[in-house]
Image (cartoon, rainbow, N blue to C red):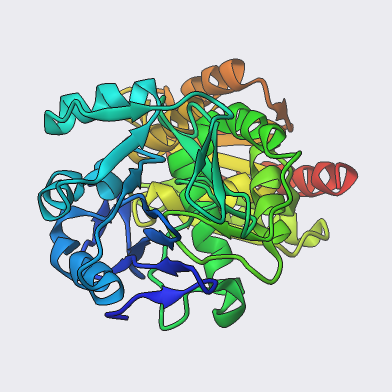
Length: 397
């Protein structure tokens, strides 16, 4: 997609698709890439909303100039200063030296710190900017998911340019609109993006949503992922669901096993869940599945069972990384089961209990711990843990 794509007769997508970056933020796998969405509004005044990652600057400028010709850009609105969106600001300013940058007070601090730019038109929450036939209205939405984040509303076209809110992983394959794309594919990647990037700030997402309640929104245009025009409420509802910790009936079992003994326990738990009547079961080896995918399914499903062997008197490191991520995200509204194993020194189950003391999930009994290889009675307890988990999950959905 090497040219601007119209969203309306005066608003255009001028973003880019990144299929080369394998790991987003040097943390999150991107097997299907990601888009950096930027938008051009052509009125008496020309406005660019957000930019793209600097490595795509040439394609970005080509799209803009292909649409505008010799005409310049009057304003650049920066909804979010993270470098995957602001990276082209300095080079864009060189291409369009008369362009005025618009942001809030905290935007100005980031611009100075990142790019040594201090010429910024600072706007306040609710302030409007006249462009000719339309006005833009700015809504500050701090901590979704940086301090300076805000959204921009086109009062004429009824488009909310939402920054990273309502975004997701996944490059845009041909189409840019949700109704042109496989929504089932993007749903998983949107939730994985939310959980790992935005989920820690779920209460702020709820506050941001409340600030939009008086707006008539016909199009949702985020900086990542599809643009939602036929059913914009879909993506808003998804973010409301994620940020209010709503769950579905299902159980995620994550284990860490060095020699297969804890794995046997996990499989017994899974069998108990299945015979308990829950068919949405996700069984993961924490050493072989990236934590972002574990978090994605855990956020989705009500039940979570964590099991690990003891490693150097502590919780097996890949499972410890998962519990640390869950603590950081402050996830709520789940039911937890615990199991583990050790040879000569315990530690894993003790640490999993301490994890739950902090998270305060409902704990399903029995808590199962095996020394050496799990004996028949231990596997029976694991089965019972799975059965009890299924019963609790069904009771809560």
